[in-house]
Image (cartoon, rainbow, N blue to C red):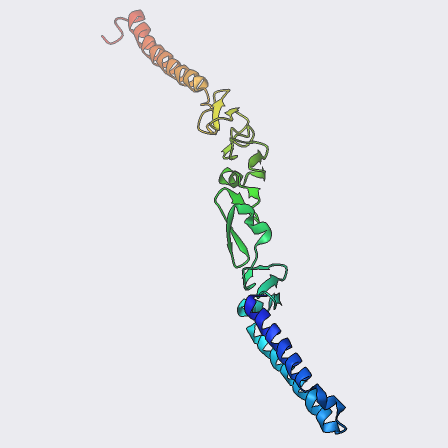
Length: 229
């Protein structure tokens, strides 16, 4: 209540008392209309004082936007739960976004490092590459996934085809048993030894056959030197 409102009340009370006591002699009158006049005008002065006092009261901004209670004595709003600002026009964000984001019409727009409805959850790097669970900013990777963001898949069975060991730092395979390739997907070359033996054997047989053919002619010429004569 400010000094203007106090002055209005004092003036109203003083005016009522002055009029009442100035005309108190009307109480001795036998005429009922005099009674009505005395009390009627006194009540009228009081009513005018109340009306003037009411309109002198500070008004709540936007009548609290329909989302709060107005304190008519000081013109301030007491907002309903979930609303804020001086006129209760703003929808509050949960936990005020924990100071980790910006509230936009009741929805938190979190800073890059945070997530959740109230920006209370510390975000994991790359959201764990969708290969792990984020627990308070730290990735718990699924089996076979490594690095801080679970971006490296190093499952010996899937990554290296069970033909090598996987380096969890880089996700690269060290192949064994003659296998090669990025994921040890290339089988070792089969030995061509048998094929070589077969080819050599065939060549030897052919050479022997040719030798035997010409040897027969040589022997025949040696045994019958006058055959053609």
